[in-house]
Length: 357
Image (cartoon, rainbow, N blue to C red; front, side):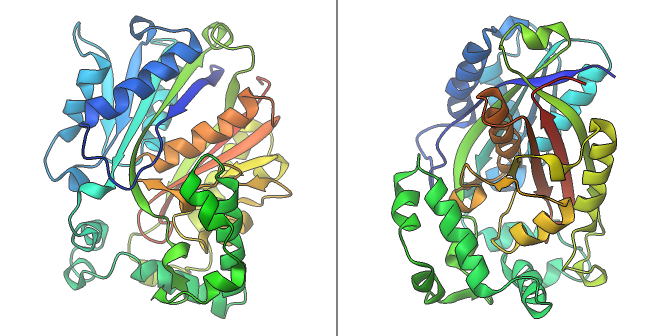
């Protein structure tokens, strides 16, 4: 297999709503920043892959608009996933393994604010016969999972509040998050429930942002940067989309993906110093820490999704943030996690290291 590395990462701030820019205008400056940081130009990219979601945009084939930022003429090699862009990165990584090119650019555009009522959008991913017609509140299934974990003694409401306080305090680049981070745990516990035992701060706030990751293979990976983050293992697994037949206190597909990625990488997530987890709800952190077998890793030092969740870009941001820790010398090994679907249904695990195999 070819050695592939993350050589650059850039993202825009996650804002509650961006009504001033279209998809191309959102991603173009971030794309330019990522390419400049890698010392590359658009013509150096052999493959483009993106992730977005027509349900949030409210129209079909909406991602085509973003190609204005990429520049689709002369014709380019390009692909798109209708899901989190972390899976676009998995496709780009696979494409590089085929040896048809050396550089791939992956981008995700999250515009979750466009939906007038997310409770009308999110049930579309549920079982169309039994669950979707009920149109459950978008946080209801997460509340069931969190409640199951509390009942099983795997977490507590105070623990969830402590997770939130730590994440908000870590997001030093976000002034609003800094203000929230000074709130005491007892103050958080006094807030009303959204879906017991989850409160508003336990739910990652939806927002708008773009993210770009540049991958390079072989010698091309060492030219742009002196310290690339090598993708040593990557795998994703899916469970049934009907939560009633799953043990919601376990993330079996995340565990399986981590085990497979570890086989490829030669080291497990337990040896990672940093873990960036796609936790759309606070209770998912202790669940994933157990499923991935994390040791003493620093979890979501960036603040994680609990400080801002750009739909279909959040998972890609986790990979970028984990890679940033390595590229900037903050860690030798890191693990990144991404998820799709209700209650951690579909999980991707990416193991990164400072040194190639």
